[in-house]
Figure (cartoon, helix red, strand yellow):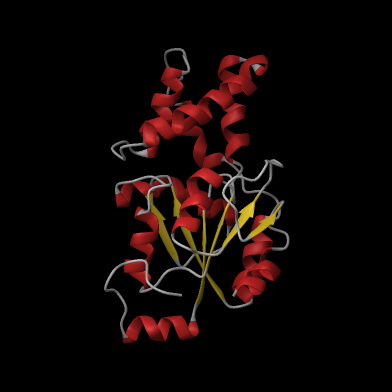
Length: 227
């Protein structure tokens, strides 16, 4: 696969391309149950009857709060709760709860099998370093590279994560795996990267992924098809 960055490429990157296969992953919504974690806190703070309405509103607020890349993800979560009308003392409830959000049941085994088949794994996440470290502990499978929004100064769908990956590894990933069409599949298409859309919610397609799966059960086989 060609470079994403003008003028990049070297003997070292050619060597990497020959021996390594890289799959990059979004984390929240793809590996970790992001909707479930947020909805639980919304139900606790606002009541079960308002949880779905406020979750939909949260989905609208988050991209607005991330747009200029100036806020940490902790600040995004806190400001979103404030705008949703959280009572005093509850504005940081999402920020406090995130380290406890759980991986989807099939995720650890799917990632282990992919590693056993020779894939190197990386996370490209719209979050902060402390959050991603806590979530990787929950997943229990090692990752070879981790790139977070607070360290690249932008949030996906901006291309900063992929630029940082290429600068660090020496070439683009072979496949990007994610649940968000807006944050991940659209920019992967822009960069001409093969992609696997994890469509857990049965959403209608928008930007076209290379492959679509309902979860990660067939991840290793699908990666092999795309390699």
